[in-house]
Image (tube, rainbow, N blue to C red):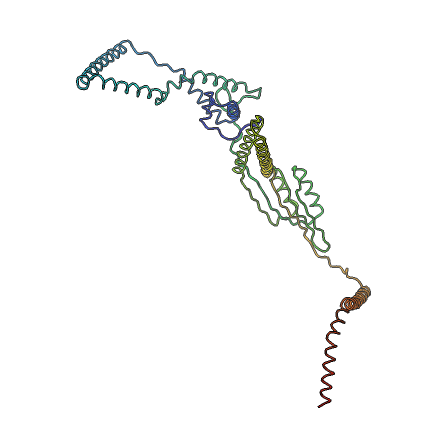
Length: 398
């Protein structure tokens, strides 16, 4: 059973006891009152108070006091009647019957309107109207308090002592940890990491291992661990080596989750209303298509919000650990370079390849650019030869 964890206002508890809530809201309030210690205690107090008010009776007055009150009331009524008669006679003598009759009609109309629309019910009338509903609802609450709903156990004890429960207001915290560890035995640390995740029901969202030669090996991983096992998992991870860096942070997403749930509820109600309109099909084809398009849009928003809600709840349920494990590396003093003959051979091969590439480059250049160079040579040499010949003739004549 999904029980609402949000607090219920005292007005809602009173409305539930009075039978004034809709069926769905009444069931939700009842489930909450059943499991909430504070609200169940409040409902018991309201119920006891209303039962005492409903059963309260005014004691009868003694006979001599009643006779004195009656005599005083008769005397006051007689004086009021005589005063009213004199006042009416005075008005009659001064103005006549017509103004008196008009004033009486206006006064009667004002009295009727005031009594019908302006009068607020007195507390005694409220208790009388709610007496039947109150008794029925309190009987139901007391019955569930004694035997529980569907054999589910006692929500409240017989002496009105609520059963202690877990606190209702629990903030939703998305926790994340960054951890850097230097280890001496890299191989065993990696195997231990897998065992730690298995013991604490976690998993690796991303893992990258670097095992380059002549350099320290390392692992960079993004781990997901249940939030209630975060402390134990961190304690075991720290045993893998020396902790070089550690940082923890928590983001409260309670309000974000509440807003998301409220928007999701409104969108679902909107979808239900649109589907009800579509089932009626009282309109043109264009109207029906417009309603179907709106339903599709609302359904898309609902699916997006549901995915966002699941992602948010997953962030709260599973803490994130950004882990980096590096090996404590010591450089090895060994002569792993090739021999002199091998290095000479490699140099000769590299020189031959370089010469061949250079020669091939010249050939390719002339093969590609030779025709163009020949054309430009003809264009430039012929005019130059003519100019030189003319210059020589001129020089011979001189």
